[in-house]
Length: 286
Image (cartoon, rainbow, N blue to C red; front, side):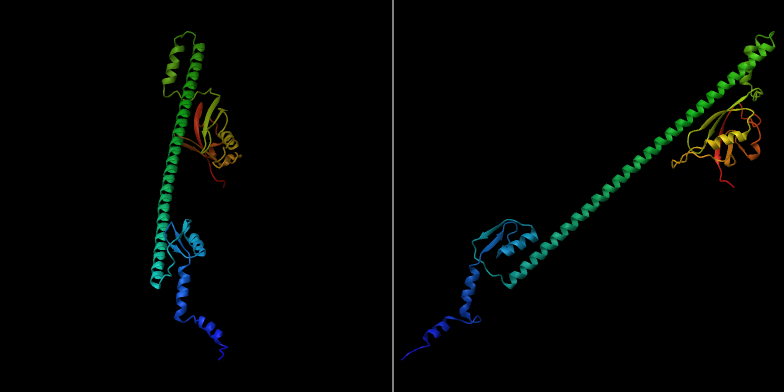
């Protein structure tokens, strides 16, 4: 008897349903023959070159080797454990990053405070040196003014003594006695024959103004001089001409403030001869 379908039945017998158990050994054998790679940096097992690339991009690891141990498909428990391990690594790395950022912020704050202390110290030192320079300048100006006054008094005393000696030739000793009397007498006053008046005028900014006027000049001439030579302000703006009506003048000791009514008076009438120190201020125009 012929059997025409024997070959087909054998072929069909060689095939199996994927859901049946006879195919399972073939699938396990294929999985077991797959290559396994191990990361030397962390020991993670990888099953393909794609896994190696992903692992390297995520962690920065670069040392990998092929393992002789056959690949074993991880179970659900192993996958869960691996997931927990990765989550712990992520948390640890996040904590390290936050700690590094916190320390960096602390160091930056320390550096900022240190810089602030250095700047404050430099500013205080500069201000102290500036005060010393101003005090030295004021002391020098006062010494110069005092020396000039003494020199002027001595010259006036000599002139008076010479005139007295010429007018009274019978009293030769008077030429030496009069200078001492004139320099020590508190009631000597301002000589009537003084023709010049040396003024030092201090303004709120800039160097003091120094000028010699005629004793017959009135106070308005001095105010006009101050207005023409008013110094630049602290912003560096060039000097400008100030109306003399905006200028107020006063003496420091004895304190006396001059007003506009004093402008027509001469410097001799105001008692500013032979020399004086005036303080100048600028008031707002009416």
